[in-house]
Amino acid sequence: MSKGGYGYDLFVIGAGSGGVRAARISAGYGAKVAVAEEYRVGGTCVIRGCVPKKLMVYASRFADDFVDAAGFGWTAGTPTFDWAKLIANKDKEIGRLEGAYGSTLGKSNVEIIRSRAVLEGPNAIRLTADNKTVTAKTILIATGAWPFVDKTVPGAEHMITSNEVFHLQAQPKRVVIVGGGYIAVEFAGIFHGLGSEVTLLYRGEEILRGFDDDLRKALHTEYEKKGIHIRCNAGIERIEKTADGFAVHLTGGTVIAADAVMAATGRLPNTAKLGLESVGVALDKAGAVIVDAASATNIPGIYAVGDVTNRLNLTPVAIREGHAFADTVFGGKRVEVDHNTVPTAVFSTPEMGTVGLTEADARKQFGEIDIYKASFRPMRHVLAGRDERMLMKLVVDATTERVLGVHILGPDAGEMAQLAGIAVKMGATKVQFDATLAVHPTAAEELVTMRTKWTGA
Image 1: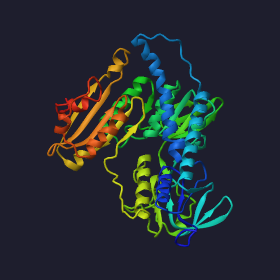
Image 2: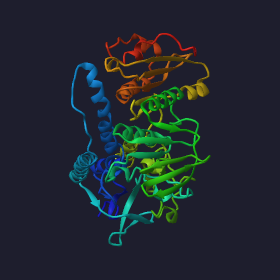
Image 3: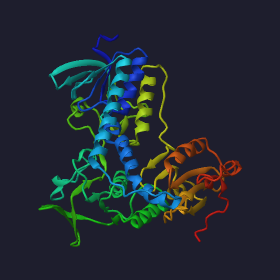
Image 4: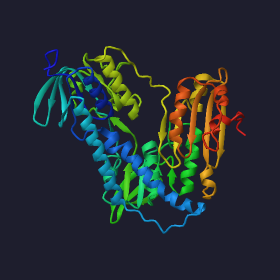
């Protein structure tokens, strides 16, 4: 029994990144904590998201490495790829990580309950596995998000999502990916690198809406050069099952044959059938839980963190929100998460890393800005003979010279964005960037050696 007469001080619904962190830190403050999870401990990121995806990204990049090696004097036989072996090894690692997450919760004295959990009141939770009701002083909703599939498209039932793609029994040789966000773009690169023929269909003007326009265009160009087919302003009329796969019918009459059709058109907050409405928890039009700066809902004692709130849907953000919740509610110190200037990466090939404002957003907010850009072929591509260019871009406030944004396309862009994020978060100026000595020869040195303002020429 908890200190307040409830079964638990904290009951967390969802054992993903945010929920696990909140549970562990809260227990460290002395709270009696339980976590309910109906699928697997670890959540989307660990089980069927960024971790297995990054493993598959690594696998896909070896194809280029084998070809490039010849330019450096290596001679090797014709490489072959085994999809089943990759999936088996990926599953083994995900299983290990799931066990590690469970072990960490156990060592933190957090009870793991393998069941779906539904709210029955502001302090009551029904566990559907055995139809048992438990009570808690505080409840945390951390159920993440779920892939969106447009069911109005005839034949939509034939599409897979990022939930199923990690468990395909065989590699599809012809893949159509519907969407233009980071999940769509990343899997286009993965499947292409592994040898599939890939077509990316996006209904908008350009892929990766919300990222800097120069990087969006540059990645589009590099993907087309690789042989990935990108169709923007593309609408789907229907998807038909055929004798040897599927036929994707586009508006205008084009038909694309595929062995797999993947929907990657966004994710929606996973709030359906949790009992939130019956308790009175306020949701927005997208179904996201509405919270304040401390992750509190409109119902006292009920909180929410991570993608289910649809604030900034990134794993490190969910983790930070979960930790801040625990500090605030059980640690006795109010902590609010700053959702501004968050570094992020798109694990395409070439890779994108970015932090801060895009050029378009900076112009809206600051008016006068300076742009610095460098486009070049990375040294590792020279001897390989690979025609792939790198792009680096700084967005600077013309008045204060503060660096507002750093945008990188090329090898290890994500790693660079993480470090650049420190400088941008601290408010570093272009003068301070210029005063930093370069590490030579590296691609990253361009970030501190760009001196000429971009004029558009």
